[in-house]
Image (cartoon, rainbow, N blue to C red):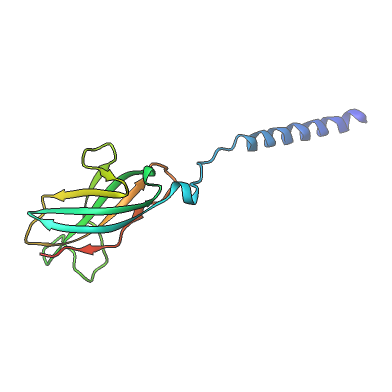
Length: 149
């Protein structure tokens, strides 16, 4: 009689031990600390000159976590593939600049970046997007801006 109850108890103990061992091995991505790991972007100055868009972006917060910036843009007009002023912003093109690039010019909190090869006679809508070096931090965007001709 004692043997009949010992076997189910032993099996139940082994199952519980196995289940607890699986829970102990659970791994998760580290969560960013709000103050220490996040940053924000704000456009300080923009100038369109000779087919180039010259941007100064202020980086607030954890600027050392900023790994990549992207200038997302679209031409505004009536041609196919162009957006319109009142339409939702759907960036059709992007230039990506990583912090190890010579184009990534971060001095203090001011990031100076540029985009060349634009048609000097067209109007463009654009925004700057920042990506953290931490994979769990969401992308950070500036507002959408419109160039002047």
